Length: 338
Image 1: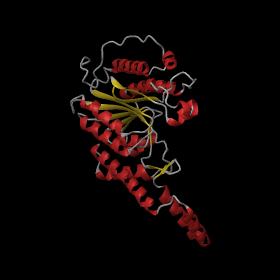
Image 2: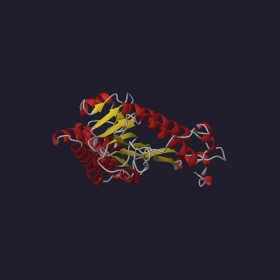
Image 3: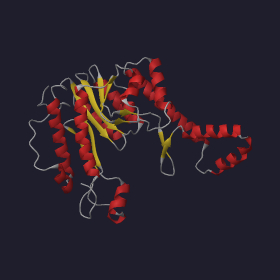
Image 4: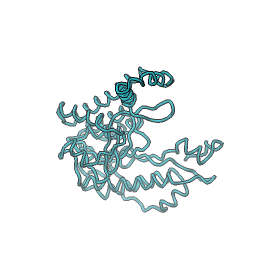
């Protein structure tokens, strides 16, 4: 491993100087640049600690709590482009609640394309929805005791400002049809209810169904790229899309082993131990930033996002609009966010 080549994903600076401020002091000061640099340095130091065990990998970090987006696939491409493809295996530490399917699909394909032989993902905590989609392209997923995957059925944003499962319209009509068949006298009532629903659109049913089917297709393609047979890929893709009654269902490592097989789910490894330490460090900073309350003079942040190479991956994100309105007030929304 060459520690002096900054173009390598695993390339690191020399010895990291001891920090001159504690995390508590940095949170109080609220300087985004200092917080970013401090976290980046600690991640580099953590990698140095584990470098002997990770020398055969290009290591990338992916901690995204606010939705996987096209910006993240661009950032991942930028990070991977800094190293020659197929010279080392790719190891990803993945923590995310999900996001858009297309960038997740692209990220998984990119990591496989850049891997020499194997694309490995470590899931120390949650990798739901689109993050699970990323996992389907890996050769193996290392899952800790608290690691969880989730169903991949798409979610739909409704006019009233909330998310619902793409299968909801179809299941709702199936339920109503069943009730009407069992109670023919209710037919007129249900016809009136549906006709008065201004947001109900018959075309939505077909559109949502196509969205769900596209999730199956993305999953099939990633599984086949990860060396699954076409028949096995179809079975797993449909199971992850249709088998669960809640989008947030937690698929732990026991259930994941039953779905993917013992060779595909690893319960104990040096890679997983590294990922646990990386997660603990990142989440400490993320929670610390989110816990800062606006006092009329300080700067608040929305947390942290870590996407890319170990030495260049940290972003301090602004607070969401709802938090600005609640804590700062509409008259002060345009304060300095660092």
